Amino acid sequence: MEKRELDKLESVELDEVRQSRDLPSPATAQQPRSRAKFSATTIIPVWIVLSSGVIIYNNYIYNTVQFKFPVFLVTWHLTFAAIGTRVLQRTTHLLDGAKDVPVSKDMFFRSILPIGLLFSGSLILSNTAYLYLSVAYIQMLKAFTPVAILLITWATRISEPSRKLLLIVLMISSGVAITSKGERFFSWVGFFIQAGGVGFEATRLVLIQMLLHGLKMDPLVSLHLYAPVCALINLCVIPFTEGLEPFRTVPHITPFLLLTNALLAFLLNIAAVFLVGAGSGLVLTLAGVLKDVLLVAGSVVIWGGRVGVLQACGYSIALCGLVMFKMSGGK
Image 1 (cartoon, one colour):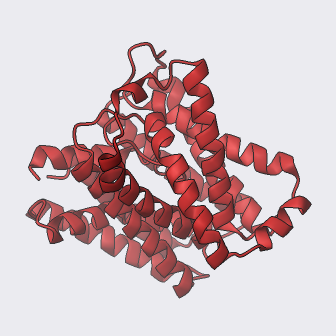
Image 2 (cartoon, rainbow, N blue to C red):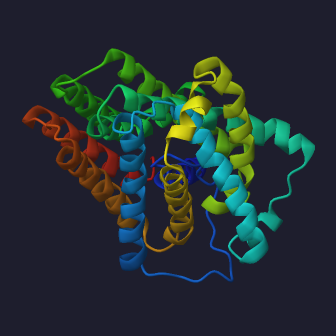
């Protein structure tokens, strides 16, 4: 892959809006012609609130309500999104871009399904990690995603390493290592689960660029395509991971809780559509960093956790490496 393709790959990772990492990122972002536009000062705060809200709400359901069925909850999110995008397609112009993405049988089995499998793995593992690790520490571990992307592209000879990128990899890796050393409630099980989620996500982002290169898909069109596929995949996984227990527990959960939780995740993806193109790469990068810092601070306030000096230093190093990576365009 040429350097300009790696630039596009990084733009996908930037839209991790992905980050809450609850729903798919686009292959390539494009604003539909008929879509209303919002200024960066308007949409970025909305995106930060929604992105942080989804993560905090999920953690609340898992660890406060004690509904410890992440596979079921993610499947419910995707089912809600699959229905919601089809309603929007028939009632608004937000999904007009779907007409420009022809999905043949060959494309489905060669591209959509493999990427859907990776995305399901990423969702399942990253949500399961909340059963073992704190919200703050999980956010810190997510900073390793760009390193995973680089390692995959280097291992597959899609791109070649440079001194600058090696320095960035060293910064992020050492920062995450220091952060882990300072974590008071460290869990190896949770660490490997989250690491697996990062690996699945990084592989998915690389595969998107390789298989869907040139397609014009914003976050909502991507969600429209992947949500049904991932929901069915996750539904097949539930019997082997959580069994029938979540279905027995759901009647004891307030329907309002599940509905608002899924709605919040869906609104995040709508906000992501307007976020793309609302600001420069630098603005979006800084917005993502601000969101992560606020989420770490907010989780400490809400759940009374602690972030020690060692952890703060390690996370600062990792964030500096993350900003350098995004500003360098992966070169």
